[in-house]
Amino acid sequence: MRRRFAGLITTAALATMCYLIQIPVAGQEGTPAAKGKGKGKQRPSGPTPRLADGKVDLSGVWNTDRPFVVDIEGALPKGETLPLNDWGKNVMKSRRSQDDPEAQCLPTGVPRLAPYPMKYLQMPNLFVILFEGNIHSYRQIFLDHKEHPKDPNPTWYGDSIGHWDGDALAVDTVGFNDRTWFDFAGHPHTEQLHTIERFRRPDLGTIEYQVTIEDPGAYTKPFTLTGHFFLQVNAEIMEYICNENNVDVRHLNGFEPPTLTDGRGGANVP
Picture 1 (cartoon, rainbow, N blue to C red):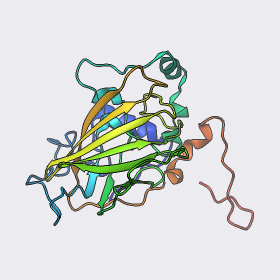
Picture 2 (tube, one colour):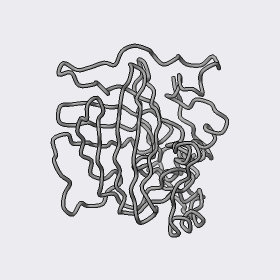
Picture 3 (cartoon, rainbow, N blue to C red):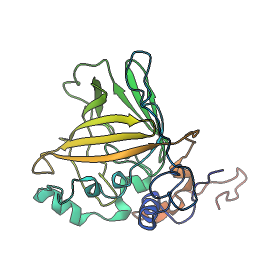
């Protein structure tokens, strides 16, 4: 049975630790980090599954790609760097790891991911991503919408419209707030963020992921990141509430959580 880490380790610190020492975190058995270590299974091979209407079936439980957890610069083509403008560079210099919204159990946004599995649900007019990590959140991609709201209310995951481009699901998203970080490294964005994602499943066990990011508020030009997600066979996401394990929150920004009691005046917090 998988167990969540509790103690004096925040979510972001755990993600970095797992990346640096190259061990598979819960739900990531079968990733490149797990191969050759006697843990987990190799990802399955086989043809791309399709639905009755001929569309590629993207559904399943998938694990995340490490650059989209720790540092998106690792998802750039070799030799390229992120085109931060002066504002973005100054923001990077000012950020502290303890200020990371993800470390405080807030949503990751797009394209950042938590180091836990995610589940894709595919329907004719809707594509849903269920995230195990952090706040057990979800993202909706509408396949029957033709345009975004004229004045969208800024949200953590934005307003997403998808369509099929051959065998790839293309997703256009706007309407983000500016509260998420792109990664643990602290790469910023503004409410001008616009992403275009492409999900392809070239075989049974792999999804090829590409995202083009445009944000003139923080970057001098658009840039494209690529990665891969791997199928988790006979797996299921589990309930994981980040706030329950983040007992070190009292050290973040001087916050002291309230003391709970057992109803008889006695403390009921470890």
